[in-house]
Image (tube, rainbow, N blue to C red; front, side, top):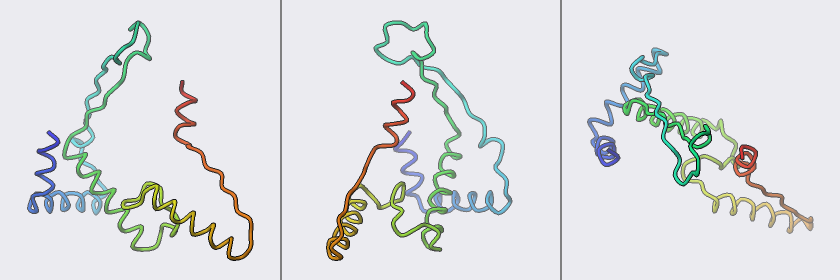
Length: 138
């Protein structure tokens, strides 16, 4: 299925149609009902000793494939427009395309070097917020 989606997106005609659908949805302020329909299934988690607890199962939500593609296109368009129109701060790197841990490291190194030139002392505090919130759920 993933190969099929990649072929659809690589096909220029098909991709342009998806962009047209996305633009019409945005212009009309309407999200068609069939894009909102989902199927929820419950699967058991592997390697559980007992399956008598809700924690032993994982819900999976299956959305309309076209809806997923349009949602992805909308996100890409919003990110592009936000960056293009300077709505995102220059040093906001998390969650953006073409930005990585290396990008953040370069910015941090830049700030440290600037402080050293000004004969200032620098320090950094870093922690993984996602890991913190995951630990709260267990």
